[in-house]
Amino acid sequence: MQNLFWIVGLLLFISACTSNATPLADVDSLPTGDAQRGAELFTQRINGAPSCASCHTLTDVQAAGPGLAGYSQRVATRVEGLSALDYTYNSILHPSSYIVDGYSNLMYQQFRNKLNNQALADIIAYLLTL
Ligand code: HEC
Image 1 (cartoon, rainbow, N blue to C red):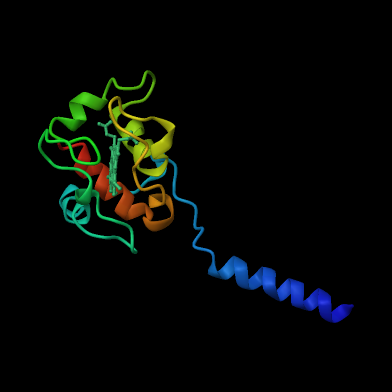
Image 2: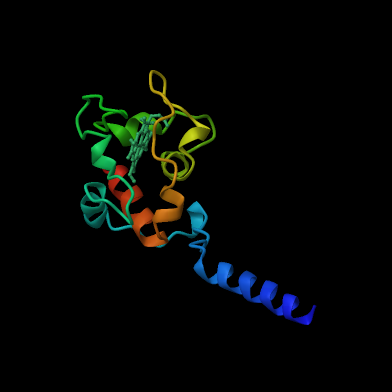
């Protein structure tokens, strides 16, 4: 019985150590983003996730996802009560919570488990320059 106690404890400990669950910061607590670095990250696979560029062009040409030309202007008023910054944070971490008109819920859902705070802040900073 006591052995079982230790085994369960050990398993819990191991799963706590191996889960990639450092929660990301709230939008207001993110570090300062580096837009140039964000531009690089946009075209790269991060921790096995597909790159943003594989689904988004930087023009108004549609791919799987919306083209991002004029992005920052467009999204400032997209959802009532959400600034462009809030909207972008939410779009990356919780893509299903708002589906852009004319698109399907196809955005990769796991960025919240793949990005760290700095990468997230960098990508957001970049998108807000578009
Ligand atoms: C597998 C394809 C795919 C990948 C990869 C992807 N997206 Fe998307 N994205 C979509 C689709 C489809 C939509 C539109 C549906 C929706 O609103 O979720 C979308 C919507 C968005 C929107 C909202 C656009 C708007 O006009 O309101 C943002 C912002 C966005 N994606 C950013 C990103 C970023 C940043 C990355 C990389 C970290 C990324 N996406 C990776 C498919 C993708």
